[in-house]
Length: 303
Image (cartoon, rainbow, N blue to C red; front, side):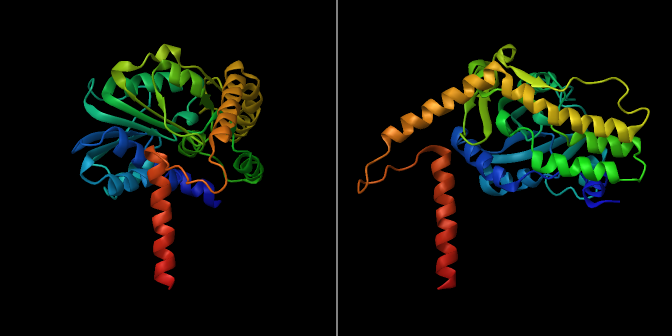
């Protein structure tokens, strides 16, 4: 079995660990002073980011619970129990927890894997079960990763090993199927915490989820029946086609114009050559300072 498919059907996905640093910085900034927060990680994957968050945030993060749609991922955690006190198999839109039972709900690189408007339904569930919500998801322009998608389409075509229902569910869950527009997230009450990626934070009571807009692949009935290989190939093709819908959407065009205007404003405010540089503030500033410290430490070690 090819490596990518084998990894998904035996354990699950691992998100880029560097995003965990940024999420940790946001948590430390907006919830500073808190101790022992009860945290829910929805779409937890292999827990790569959660492990980093626990190490970076220290006493701020207490008990951490995970949920995921992939049965392989749940089995992976049940065999190890390294990060989460509990990992459950469930939909992001139907969480088996009481209202406001967590201090913080995380959705890290999960919503883009949901069909159509399911991402909005999943956000409603995050808001229901937790007092605060933090979401990380690719920006619309980066939602469809063609560098991964096209090679995977070719490899899936050439893959002669039959796809079981279990394999299909694991493969399907990894495909990007929807995106959220940042301007609508902010209109709904979320704070945007990064320019290069979609990282959003909010106090649940202050969010109006009906204002959130997204586009995505509509869910089809009986996807886990019939020729599962053809179903998977069709899903990959639908994901590639979704990019054109994203690019043409009025919200995306408005967000791009807003980003261009912000860059112009920032360029106008940049200090002149020879002027004292302005200190970076907020979690981005701390992230940059952390990276500079690491580089300096490596240089000192070499010397």
